[in-house]
Length: 210
Image (cartoon, rainbow, N blue to C red; front, side, top):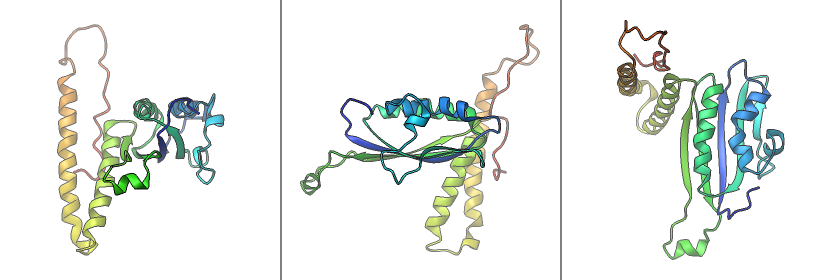
C-alpha cells in the first residue's frame, strides 16, 4: 500500500466488455495504474480489495470482461490515476461502460458533523469506450435509466416514450457537433501531402440516436 497519508478509502466499481483479442497480459497493463497505486508489483498481487467480501479486479475470461469491485486507501492524488486508467481501458474495451468511483473520508468523525463540518466524501462517474460513439451511448443509457426511474414514480412507463426520444435528440445533436468538430480538424480532401489520411472515432452514430 502507499506510504503517504491516506485520508480516503477509494472504491472503484464497474464492468467493462473487452475486445476478443485482449488477454490477461494486456488487461494487467491496462489496469496498471490501479495495482501500482496500491503498491503491488503485478495485477495478481494488487487485484485483491481492501475488503475480503469484494471481488477486487477480475478478468472474467468466459464472458470476456473486466469486473471491478475494489477498494484501496489513498489521497486526492488518486484522481490523476483515473485519467490514465480511463485512457488505458478505452484501448481494450469493446463497448461503452461506466466506472463509479467513491471517495470515503475516513478522517471525518460523527462529532464533526454535529458541529456543522462537512466530510470530503465524493462520488464520480466516468465513462469509457473504444470510440466517442460508444462512450456517448453509455452516457445516454445511464441518463435514460435515471430519468425513467425518477418519472415512473409519477407516470406509467408506457407514457415515457416521448421523454426517451427527446433525450435521444439531445445526444444526436451532441454527436453531430462532435463529428463536425473532428471534420474541421482534418486536412481538405485532394491535398497532395504524400500519404493517406487517418480516420477518427466519431464516425459511427450511437444506437437509439436517430
